[in-house]
Image (tube, rainbow, N blue to C red):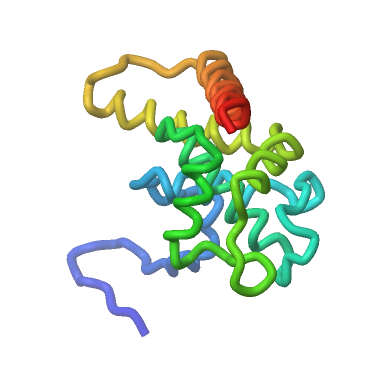
Length: 169
């Protein structure tokens, strides 16, 4: 039951359920991790090659690897050896085959097989970083073409650094 104040002629209305606003209101992304998570969730399973053929849950390790690579490349961490170390030290990163974590070779193979998906997620991560810089007054605009070019450059840089590490071994 609703009541009206005697001095107004406004009619009571029912508010729409919050589900009606889901397509119109998107929460502001506050961290790079959130931006990468949104990008990774948008990637379809069918477009990904699995990190491990024994992935116990559908694509859990694959999506975790995709998110980790996009975050690391956005932060300019390119070495697969360093990324494998980060995965080992992250208690939330899904393990392969029970207790084993993916190694540098697994991340190299994953990057080669899923380059397009990594590129899409990295572009979103770089867009988030660019928008942060705009809000701080460091940049005035972000170009989609430049973001795509920068994402490609970073993936090439990771490939180059890995090849240099392999040559040194």
